[in-house]
Image (cartoon, rainbow, N blue to C red; front, side, top):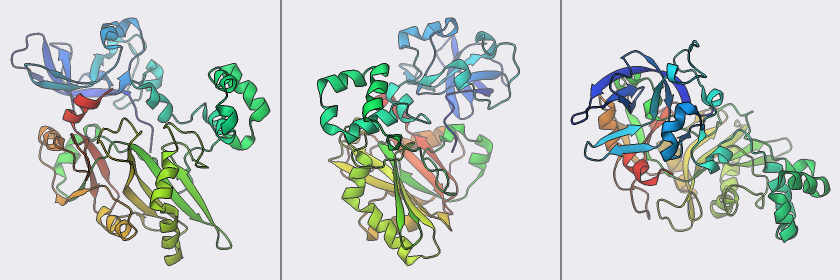
Length: 394
């Protein structure tokens, strides 16, 4: 699965007036609704679209965003009641893009220096973590890591390098997310707004709807090796977590905490023992609760919710079938809310359906949204509640 594009070239699909507004109008970019100055775009124009969660570079062309710290969020215009998600700018207004030829869909995130608006996300969702080997080194020396001088050096680039000369090892460089398994990918669902709208709403195939859980994704994979041995992979979104004391982005290693609480390895090994034709089996899910992402669902403890079960022969399973299998081993699954859901005919109806109270047992507050999956396990996408984003976006 490719990394998310925060800034990309798109076509203005439609333009609509806003009742009561005399200087701004609504425009459609893919499935997003965005505000623009009246007359700034014509239907069919190319625009540079910046997605929510973005932070723009501090440039002359982005100066108007200085009061908002250059961050793009979901916003609602008070009395007008219009929700806008994202920012669209004419290519001619951005020197790096002006006068150049672009195609619809071109990713210009790196070209423009656009980052995630939450700094932690720039590290957590990066292809690689530049501090991974230093964090792993510190995890192997817990007593030293508590020393004031050690912590002082770890805060400085030259200091980390100096410590690594004396205390580091080659194995301190954790490997990234494993890519050799055909059906296993990083867990990052495509937002419904980014899909082809005509294809989306003309498809009336029944879908499985599950509750979206706001936490951190984990991948647990067991590979069959020779002589009745196995190799176990515990992974965050981008990094393989070799040991329970390996430093990650949370107060403790929540991925191994999930393994210890739910005995996921035992579950996976049982599946390989029962299916000798499988070379590997994988369970992916969301870990949510205390000390994770601010615990927006107000859950007690740390909880795992499976959402993908994968084997080397069949790929990703039907969610209902996978949930039933996990239930036998007391491994929770994300709440399944509908198994015969038919998409409505328009985006606004779909977006409004995502709003509401959280469906996770033991939770409180708003739901984050829905995830939709085809019955064959191949297609999936997410619909994040705008109501939820207005409350929780950083």
